[in-house]
Length: 268
Image (cartoon, rainbow, N blue to C red; front, side):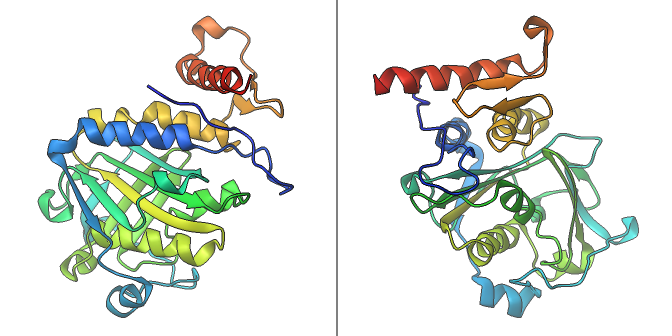
């Protein structure tokens, strides 16, 4: 399995320590290939203009704050009582990202029980222009669609996403293909560096969601959001934990160290 890539940005941007996440995107591709039989893929059915006309989408985060009470919920995704993962993976390798593609592992909203609490994962894959890398915190924020999509309410904690879809929104045609279209439009609106965006959703089962957990952890490290681990200027993993053998993040740390070692051996 090939996971080699460059870890530092090229050029003089102030965020030059942000890592290219190409290895993680490749692993998402492997995840999808392993679940091919229960995965559907589509090109985004709506552009930003159609989203605005049909669903009230706001291209510039100027929509109203969305509050969906329990009595108004049609479908709930990623509730704290079940599995949830969310991440945005950014790379300069445009060949890794299929512009406008939306993939769903499991059923769309119309195949989920009304009022049920369903496991959920959301992965946004973003290709940026060579020599450019957007602010990682802005990249993270854009995936929540806050103030952008009526009928769709998000509560987030690091690495997790808890979504409520309203009855009115669901009855009006709001589904995950609509949400994926909105995410792709949002990244196009917010970042001049973005060349392509792609979205993967998982609604199948907790096991499929949890299969993405290590990728999510490594993404947080590379984006500088992890509580213990960070990517140093020299490409080494810096850690606040003193006892590696008992640290729950050891698999993610070892994986990233392997990538660094492979890259250095290729460059010799």
